[in-house]
Length: 77
Image (cartoon, rainbow, N blue to C red; front, side, top):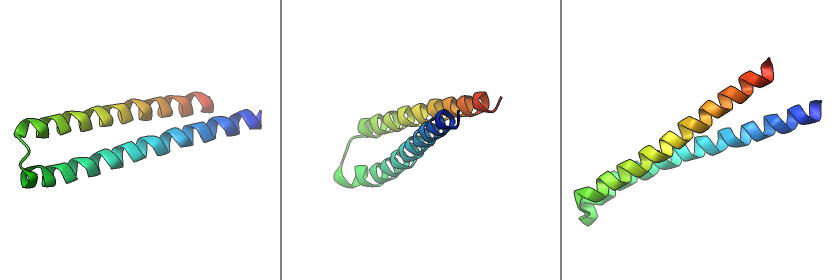
């Protein structure tokens, strides 16, 4: 029983690290692109493309975080 619980905990921890990396990476990417875009002359439509890509990544991280929360809650009870 403890082996299964330990495996589940490790899987949940991996998912949490992945969600954290996606959040941090997407925000760093967004900040860099907001700074870099005007300096290299990218049109505004590319800024919207970057914004939507980052929003998609953050939405994915939100879904994964919700799944982690549900798994932890189910494992407790």
